[in-house]
Each structure stands twice: as C-alpha cells, then as structure tokens.
Length: 114
Length: 110
Image (cartoon, rainbow over the protein chains, first blue to last red):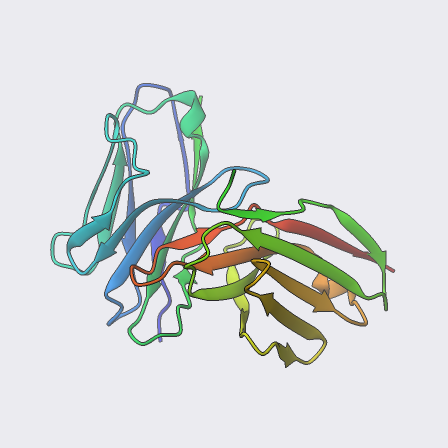
C-alpha cells in the first residue's frame, strides 16, 4: 500500500515568490494534516481536514497561507508571498478511522526562502 | 507555556546504557499519548502508543501518569541505531488535535 506522497521534496525560492505543496494521503484516510517543522523543533499544526472540511485552521497564517482539499482526497498548501521565516519542512500526514490515533507522514517538502 | 514539553537534550549515552525521557502535557483532558521517532532529515514515525497501565515493546517501555500529567519512555540496552529524536505526542479529546513536543535528541555512542 502506498504511503503519504508529497511533492516537491525540495523547493528554493526568493522571498515574495509564491510556492505550493501537494499531498496525497493514504487511500481511505479521511483526516489530513499539514504541519510545519523548523530545525530542532517538533512539527507544528497548520491545518487539519476531515474529508474536505477544514476543522482546525487556527494556526494557519491566513494572510499568506491557504490550503484546500476540494474532493476530500489530495490537498494543496500554498504560500503567497513567501517570507524568509517560512523556510522549514512542510509535512503532510493522514490518519485513518478507528481510535488508534496514529499519524502517517509523508517525507516532507523542504522549503528554502532566499 | 507549551502544551507539550520535553527536555531537548541531547542525551549522549554509550551503547548498552539505559536512558529515560520525560514529557509533560498541560491539558488534563488529553485522551491519547504516543512516542514517535524521527531520524535526521526524515519524517516522524510511530514508535509506540502509551497506555494507562504502561506498556512494553522489546527494549522500550512507556509509562503514563495522568495525575501528574507526564509520560515517560525508557530505552534499555541502547543500540547505535537508537540515535534519533524522540517526539512526545498528545491527542486531545474528541477532536483528534494532535500536538507534538519539540523532541528529545538521543546520541548513542560506541
């Protein structure tokens, strides 16, 4: 079974440019998360989806960040315009049903803003 | 105060040593608890869940103390391959809000 797939793996852009990250969760997983992880820190939640509904976006900087999961499957996270402080690894994770609570992560998208 | 706090370490231990990590959480209504392992430049992966009665998986033992709101992970007979960052994870009641600690780095030396 395929795991969580993210792209691109690496992205280098100049500040003020836009960038987008894509995530395809494990088939059948209704819950999808976007996390941001800075060096030496744990993942910080940006947004959580239940199917196509964003149920927790309280930590998403809405002035420049947006996300969508139109059909309740794959998702896109966008930053426009990017700032130097946005350099981080953007992790997508999905969780299936049941009460295990286990999150399955993609390999992440490493963003460098110059 | 952060919702989940861990000692960042690093912990430098020789092979064969026993090492313990602690983690505290602030939300008394938290429902589920986990330890994840993250290797350098890799994604986090579930190491083990933490149950109220305590649980063991080979050389790893996890404990939960709800009264004091802390979780522990004990690693016995450390191996070089145990070198990684260990993330404490707390799941909130109902909404499946998953909060990660900052992680504790472990280096096991030959």
